[in-house]
Length: 118
Figure: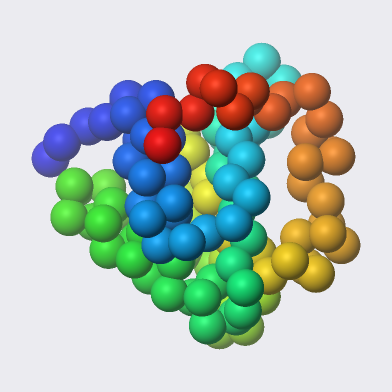
């Protein structure tokens, strides 16, 4: 089994999301904020179908690398969580993302876009 460091995992995930046309990808660094995860990646998709497709592609890619993600929310596909251990990925339809506004909840944790490798 291949173990990826959090930065390698973030790079892999953001590349997959970007390649599959996810929108507004944001990375939150939560290491020093008392959260139960080190990083969150938040992205939008144009429809529930795309939310599900992004989550499925991401999950399959992680499994191919020996990472067994936990995926929640596929039945509705308005908001899907892919738990990849140190990194959680939230994929939203835009209206659902706006409603929950995780970026505001974790304000100040956003990684500057020039540090994103994707």
